[in-house]
Length: 283
Image (cartoon, rainbow, N blue to C red; front, side):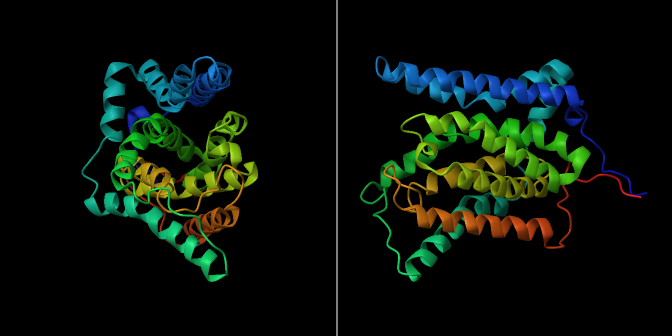
């Protein structure tokens, strides 16, 4: 029998604790996201604040569950593992520029087949585009999500199911978590096909899980990748526009992500190894 890699104490979560995490993450986010539209007409600033606070459900749920389960010491150990920064600068650079590659490939394929692209939203606004990267990191998803999805849920799930199955299941949960945003005007999700978005979330979850395990369970590279995905999409014009146009480039993006995810899942390469157990023991 092949032994499992040693488990970090704070990452060994009972099924009840994992279920509690998901319940808290969904309850927090969905409550704020259902409230935000009700305030939009009378108090738009408050509505925006509610929507932003809602996005922190996964990370806050992870902190709460780890603190309750392992106390302050366990919380410090967990945060220490999540914030490991000595993972190699190449991973950080690769995470930052990888979205440029797959979005650029999707845009090129679309144009090569006779399609056209709208002007880049960043054209003539280079400084604002740079500032947007910081804003996306702080309130655009990564900081509020990744300590929960990858920092807590992924290690717990992949200890039982292996990293491949865990990444797919977590991708489905990640897509489901976004559902209220499809019914809130002005969000990115409100003008995207729900099924196509779910497919992109599941494929992205595989890539994020692979990166997380390759970098010894550090959340930092995943934060960089999540930030880059969200921010580069406001520079490279491959997202669906509010009127529903520009769908084809986004379809190419999703197709590229799915191909990359399939290569990682079925390519036959070595299982990503890091500071966390990523596969079940096998006879």
